[in-house]
Amino acid sequence: MKPDSQNVTDYTNNNTIFMVWSFKDNPEVKEAFGQLCKLIINLNNSANIRFPVSRASCVMGIGHDAWLGLGLPVPLPKELANFAPIVGNKHTAVSSKGDLHFHIRADNTSICYDMAAEISNILSPVAISTEEIHGFRYWDSRSILGFVDGTENPHGQDRELFSMIGNDDPAYRGGSYLFVQKYIHNLTAWKELPTEQQEKVIGRYKANDIEMSDDVKPSNSHIALANVGDDLKIVRDNMPFGNMSTNEMGTYFIAYASTFSTVQQMLNNMFIGSPEGNYDRILDFSTAKTGSLYFVPTFNMIDDFSS
Ligand code: HEM
Image (tube, rainbow, N blue to C red; front, top):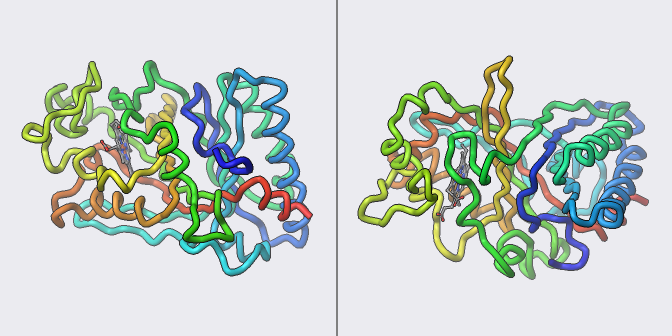
């Protein structure tokens, strides 16, 4: 990993809290953000020392409007913009607001809880929490749809290559683009599908997680459309979540990328279709409720922002 990058290449952990915050119109915002930057560095250093086996970390992302409002350096990271919705014939990748995004991971909930609480203490006076999702590892890293999620993620040095900005934007080298979407699944409809049909939606076999051969894999399966080429990868760390009382079962989709255009290409294939109209069947069972893009600065950048 590049020495001062945030923990974007870490592998999925057992517990996650995802938080989205939006700033209020408050004169104290900049001061609070400075304190927050110090806290993020402190939380990560402290977790490494106190709980080395927990692989605990907190990754902070900053949205386009917040970047400008906080007076952070210009020119901005090249691709940092507000996510524009992608409207397909049947399904839409909506865009939602968010100034700061936190991706908190640990092997136990106590660490996640304490990190989220410390962040909230600083932000509560100046910002509103608009989303908080508690994700968990479901069996052998399965999505709540029952399929293993994460298998074709890049490994080894490819994780850094595909998740971090390189020399094409030198001022922001080592940073990442972070794209998130909260999906709610129609589990009732999904469970009514026989396993063989579910497998055709994903493009892999359910029990053993083996990919279908090209002559069997439907062109509108999720992996047929999400795979946009060996040179165009992203690092995903999706987590399932579920709430019985609201009957909201979902997937928090999260991707770190060296360039947002790769994510955009995947989304176009999924929502508009390739060719147009041949959209991703997973969307017939999954509705995107949010969608936003952030920039993940390196720790050195965060340190600069804190003063
Ligand atoms: C693969 C689930 C949304 C990109 C997969 C796999 C599953 C899965 C089960 C197969 C195993 C694996 O390789 O990880 C989901 C669910 C989603 C979702 C439940 C939300 C409803 C997305 C979105 C994108 C995406 C929005 C991109 C913007 C990918 C990619 C692969 C993949 C690149 C690997 C394709 C390959 O090369 O085989 N996903 N996914 N996924 N997904 Fe998703």
